[in-house]
Amino acid sequence: MSEKPHLGVRLLVKDATDWDSIDTAGIVAMRAKAEKLLASPLLRFVTKRPDAGARIEECHLDLPGRRLRLRAFVPERAEGPRPLVLSFHGGGFIGGSPEQNDWVNSGMSAALGAVVVGVDYRLAPEHPLPAPVEDGVDALEALARDPFGWGVDPERIAVFGESAGGTIAALLALRSREEGPRVRAQVLVYPGTDWSATATEYPSMERNGRNPGLSVERFRKCADLALAPGDDGEVYSPAKFAGLADAPPALVVVGGLDAALDHGRRYVERLEEAGSAARIIVHPRATHGYVSTPGLVPAARPAREAIVAFLAERLAVEPARR
Image 1 (cartoon, rainbow, N blue to C red):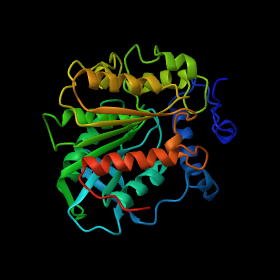
Image 2: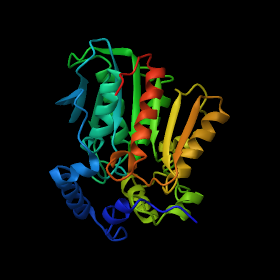
Image 3: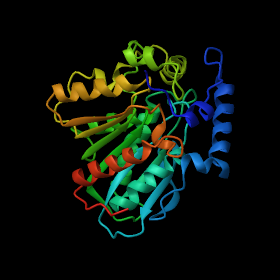
Image 4: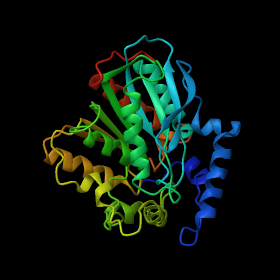
C-alpha cells in the first residue's frame, strides 16, 4: 500500500490556483493573501511558535539600488563570536517570505547559539533571476562584515534554503569556493536543483506531482516566471553543474511524497560523484513544505534536529539541549 500525506496536509494544504492562466496581478494578490494568512494567530497550530531561546530583530540592508528586509534570530544564550546562518525561504521565486521559516530558523539559532538571518529577497515576475541570487550574494558579503553588531564569526558561515531558497543557498555555497566569504556548510530542504528544460522530467515529478505542496503545473509556472526570456535555466541548476568538486558539505532533507524529491537526490548524487561530502534524509510520508508545517507533519521535528546536529558539527559548536 502506497503512503499517503498526513490527514492535516490533505485537508489544509490545498492549491486551487489556475497556474496556466494566472498573471502578474494574480501573483501579487496571491502573495498578499499568503502573507495575511501567515500572520494569522490561527495558523500558529500549523507553523508553531518561534523558539523563545532566540529574539527576533527586524532590520534592513541597504544595497546599491535596493533595500532588503532581514528577519534575524539572535540567540539569547550565546556571546560572540557567533556562527552565521543565512536562510532563504521557499516559494518558487514568485512568493514566500522569511516568516514562514520562523520555527526552523529560531530553533537553529537557539540550539546553535548562531545568528540566523532570513533574507527577504526580490521576487519574480517583477524581479526575475538572477535578482534573487544577487540579493543572496550581496547579503552574504555584507553580513559577514557584521554590520549590525551581532558578533558574527566570518569563519563560521552556513547557508540554509527551502525549495527555491535551496537553489539560492546551493549557488552561494558553490560560489564561495572561489569568491566571497567561505561557506562551511549547506543545508537544502526539498531544494529546486534543476531549472532547465528537464526540471519536470524526474520520476518523482510524475509520481508525486499531484500531492499537496507542489504540483508539476506550479513548478512549470514558477520556472516560466522566474527565468528571463531566452534563459534556459542551466546556470541556476546546481544538479547540472559540470564541476562540483570541493563543494561545502551538504545535508539535503526531502519528503518521500514530494514532487521535488529527485531534485534533492540528483544533487547529492552529483556531489558524491565529484568527491564532495553530501548526505540525504528522506522522510517517507512528508510532502513539499513540511519543515515549515510542524503542526501537520511530525517529521518536521526530527528534520530540524538533524539539521541542528549537522550544522553543529560543521560550525564547531556544542548544541544546547532542548
